[in-house]
Length: 255
Image (cartoon, rainbow, N blue to C red; front, top):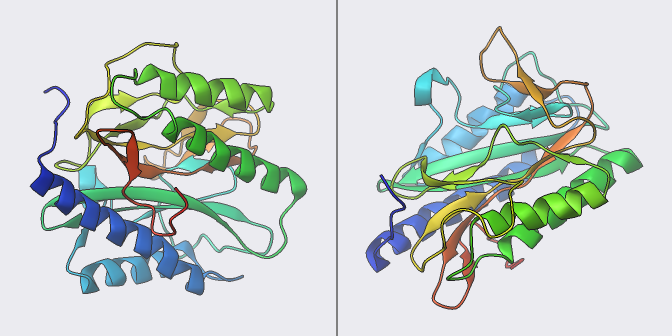
């Protein structure tokens, strides 16, 4: 297929969808409290996306039955919202949403917590957020995609954590998943070169313990750490510009 270079019109569509995805994550903050189920949050997310003229990309994707992924504590990614998963004081969790607005995709995720969390959980979250920032800083025309993963893995290993290698970032915008694959652990100067008009996600999943995951047999989606230790993830959709990058899902002007 090759990496799609988007036209200005396509970029504008992807930007709008990405802003909606970012605003969805902002909106849901107000509903997070001790005792809510992940399914309750998922229903609110779906309603908000539809009220804004879009549809959730995950719903029906390869048989997935929900409008978001909500992954608490040792769940690395693809946690299926359920009435049986109740969030409680001390939990950390990732919410991942992808919107389709007028045919264009925006994909983002971030970490949340309830009440006071442990120091080790906070340190993992902080390191994961910083690793995403380091990856984003590698986005500029002519740089190699591998340098995103190289810089993330070097930092994370220095912190004593591990990078999940079984899942990666990906091209996004016209389709849910496009070329290239964006590895979060890679060799320096490996992979294709970035060009203006490319859009993709960077979404490092960082584990407190071992890097590997295991998928729950009963739903075929929920991926957990093999050792039951904590995991964290942040994700943005990025555009390569003429001079560097634009973080399309950044609704807080963080970048």
